[in-house]
Image 1 (tube, rainbow, N blue to C red):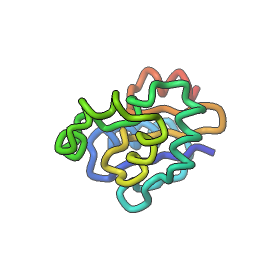
Image 2: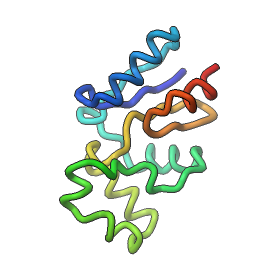
Image 3: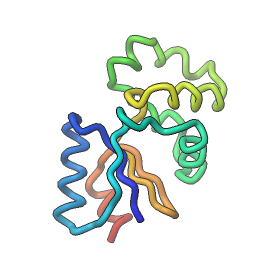
Image 4: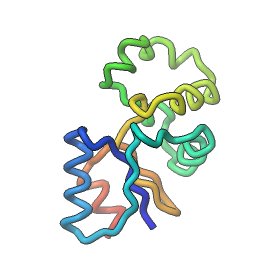
Length: 117
């Protein structure tokens, strides 16, 4: 089962959801603002994804910018970065697509098509 984690007001999330619906891909929807991922969830997804941890941060978000994370993240341990991510869903790159054998951050249609078909 796929877990689709998004922010309903995000246009990229809306495009991703439309893609899933149009391709008849079933998923469980989770609003990241209402149900922020926990430290343990984020740690597991990060380890499963094989992606750099920075890919889990919403680097274009207002909160990321207001906290000055561009300069702070390189100085933080992975654990501190994951703990920070778990404090507010608005820091997390979205949408997230979580499956048993992969994790996708952000929506790139070609990447999603390759993984889901």
